[in-house]
Length: 395
Length: 213
Image 1 (cartoon, one colour):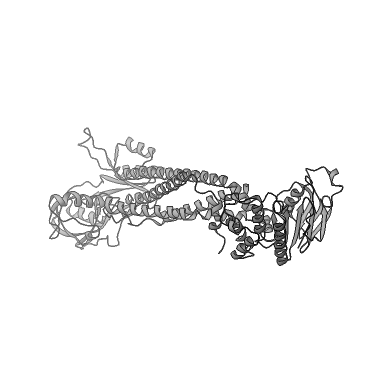
Image 2: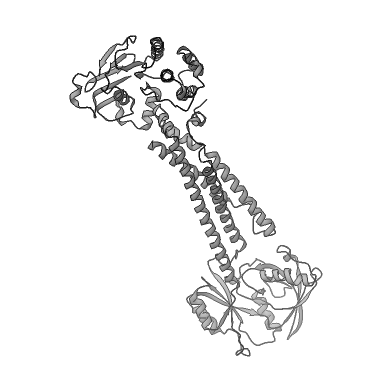
């Protein structure tokens, strides 16, 4: 039989101070669990609170309106061409465009599947400001079917408030494109009905969007008002939370739709908390390893005479280091495997019970969590081996 | 295989005391197969010499070389290999594991680089009259029994040189002769050299060379 730990086990005092040994195992497990859960939570927060597009090209898109106060309620709150030009000139604003709104009456009827009728508004904006523009978002004169993009907030509002209150069916993201809504326009030159088909959902623009050329045509055909200036502007900026930008907009008495930026803030705060927990986890791991190193030092000190004699009668210090260090590999492997499994179970439970199986979240833990666990395992084994080798060579 | 000593002298003994020594400050070569007796009165550095040769101490001047490689420069791994395969020893102070059994003491050496099977241990202990002690803790054995254990331990590995430092001090004449026979047989198996250091010449050790320390 090849020489192994069993052969030298009787010569080592390993049973001493069992309590500190087990405490260090438990401490290591807790630290690793904290770290792995924090990493997975960080990823979860990212997936759940992802503004899928706004920062895709590195920009924030926010809508601004002119602030309406008691004093200026009766005035015109639309943005003139000069207002828009001034916005574009600002160093912190990369682009600005107005939302064109309908200037005629619009009624929407759900039809057989979703029976409701409501007065509607329609808006249009430059396509490069929209986050999701499917290829069929276009209109030709004479076309009866109008592609519509609605805000994800409106869909959520419909599903959680509107539908339950009127006993209407809820609509999923996937099934929304199968619904055809009847749009009844009435204005100057009479009435006309169109069919509206929701082709996409936007996280960025909180509106009901139709192709710009269609709305401009419809406004001309049915428009009651002579007003051509937009009441809402979307600006493209690198940082929606920039104090200088916010100061400028406040100075101009412009009101900002802060929802999306608040969203980003919430995500930021949560991620900071989770990073703090991860840091704490690392600290606990370090403490556990320090405690374990005390145990090792004690073991080697108590076994010093025997170890010295083993070296005297010809045992190789390198072999002794490797063999003694190997004894603890099963412990480390067990701790890591258990913590990975617990993390996976906690994550699955979170996804299944707390998040009700939301699609944005995978039920399985992220590969990076397993990679981190593996790296921790290798590190523990390496640090352990180096410490034992150092202690043995000192003898 | 050979071990050569070039002007070796312990640094803690005055140089003046070496004039009559045939070992200190001399050039000596030990070859495999030779039987060397070193007679050393108390205080002449007999155990120090053995410790220098085994690599346990370095407080000497001159050089000791194993196959022309100076052992002074050996690192821990070199010494491990040297002691596993080329040299074996019976220490004057025995250096057994007191809290382990006789069998454990013998096995821990044998399994390092087995020259014999486990059965051979039983045969050797029978020959030296300590077969009943195999499962006893070493510390419970008498000094004479421990000496026999140390001798058997030294014969469990391959070696080119066997160093013996007063190995029979607590054995009666009969046991001394039996132990010597066993040692000579084992050295013969390996074509190894025996270097026996004692206070006075050992009658039944037919040495090729006797050196005064």
